[in-house]
Image 1: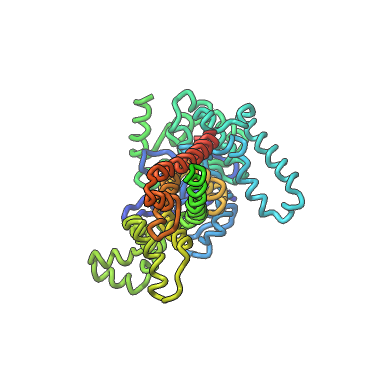
Image 2: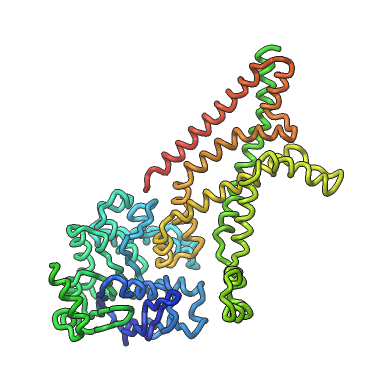
Length: 262
Length: 240
């Protein structure tokens, strides 16, 4: 069974239709790359999955459970949406780290707040916090940032900040980790270190959705690829297949422009 | 009259200024925060009324469309801020002091209470606009980052936004606080015998220097305020 099924998602802002009839599914342990030019709706799609936008139509199903159904208001309660968001992790283009917290605090803050809702929190407070901190340090170490745990975001390079953001998303143990153009705000040198981290996550079979402009990366790391244009899915399939041998004229056009530039 | 006597009398009356100052600061900051939330409130009760929907379909008449988008809480807060910022504080002092007795003869507020109420109402309006600027100045991405990590709205406010807001508003709030210290002497308009009123009394006895000497009290007080402010700013310097 697919870990994620997206059925006929549609989203409009006023009269502008941003997403139209988006459907796809994702197997556990797979990486899905979403490519397409700016304004094609890729980011909006990710934001819909994270409930930062509410789709006007469609359903989102995770592990067989319907998380969202535009036709069923019972699935849209604010109090429950908060918990549902935890199925998804999100890494933003502009990192969005909390500037007043150290790298470690950025990673542990949400877990600490969530732990307060546990019934055994009062009795085991110390132990719970120690565990959360240990997990946070471990995640940062995995990102190659063990030495940077006590640095504040402004003391870190863009690539380091984005890796902290990845650790922060992983700390909530999401079923599916979403990346929204994770390297678009970085220069080529820093891009490499972030892509390396994402690649190693893919090797560890983390289920991921990556919106990206890095075609070679999408081809090598992703299992599936979706090409979007004008709010619709133009082509989807095996990553290598779609990027090397696109069947649609529009996809070919888009990819050839990348080849020209590289 | 000796310098020491003048000093003592001015100092005693300056205590009234201090009282107004601390009461105003203590109450107008939280009130200002509430007003700023009011201004930013998005509640539009008329938007989804079915009757309106029908009317709107019939007519694109602009006032009708505007009315359906009416945000009453925000509107009320903005009217409040407008009134408080656009009329002289002296007038507001007089209104708060004389109005209760006018409406209900025999029941007047004490001069000090009236002064404090007027100052709190007035300064809350200014503070609310500073808070609003500070809150709206925090990038939307901060809130979204909190949301995708499963935080509640209040957790996001207290653990993510608040400190960033405070860092942003310390300089403009500082300006207002320093102004407030000096504005407290406007209370003499409703015959509160604060330091300037006292100094003027010396003037009536043809002693001019106490009036100017009263300035020293303000200089010292605001010197301390300035120090406290720059300390606060330094404390928040560890992040950007």
